[in-house]
Amino acid sequence: MASHSKLLRARIYVQATIISCGLLLTCASQAMAERPPLSAACQAWNGHIAALIDQHRIAHELDDDQLGEVIRLFYEAQSTCSALRFDEGLTLYEAIPIGPVASRPLR
Image 1 (cartoon, rainbow, N blue to C red):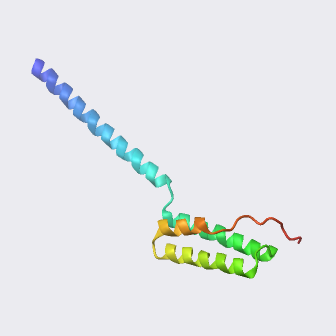
Image 2 (cartoon, rainbow, N blue to C red; image 1 turned 90 degrees about the vertical axis):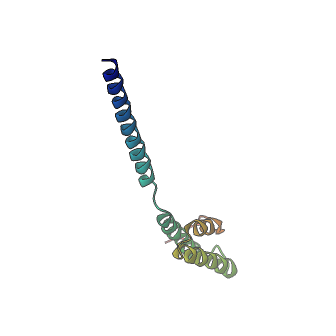
């Protein structure tokens, strides 16, 4: 009877281990699924920087040389993301020296 009890206990431990591993894998895959892909981050930065460039162009807060440099860096980041080098592209987007417009033109 003692060997039957040990066998039953071992079977329970094995089942519990398998269930635990399954839960860990499920939780990890759900956590990874919640984070957007780097390509989506590149697209978001692209839209954000493009909007800022447009706002600065309308507000005339950057001179032609500054605007030209910002646009050059923007296209470099965009091209890098298009080449599937997302980490590098995101770093380039983050380094573009542009922020919110200080003054809004009247409509």
